[in-house]
Image 1 (tube, rainbow, N blue to C red):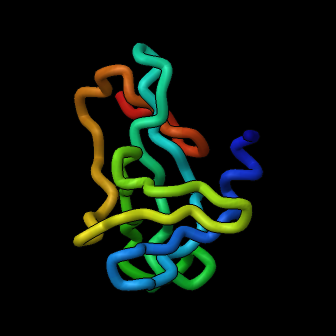
Image 2 (cartoon, rainbow, N blue to C red):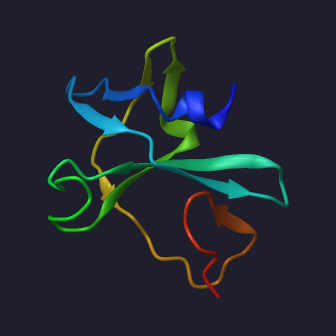
Length: 99
């Protein structure tokens, strides 16, 4: 599956049935060669310009199913996007590497 195909899918939380949005970014662990988590923009943002500016981080272990049109996740509470300071091999697509 291409990353661009992955980013067109809607992310749905099976806990409350809420649509969280579409994937905007991925956190990768290059040392282990795996996806750590997916990043979904906060719904309160308007075209990325207004709003709190935080994104929702969904750890890969919380993905229940990847379907043709949607990604089903089990997320009890949405946590805001975290700023990584130590960069222990975790990189993000579509964002600059943080030093």
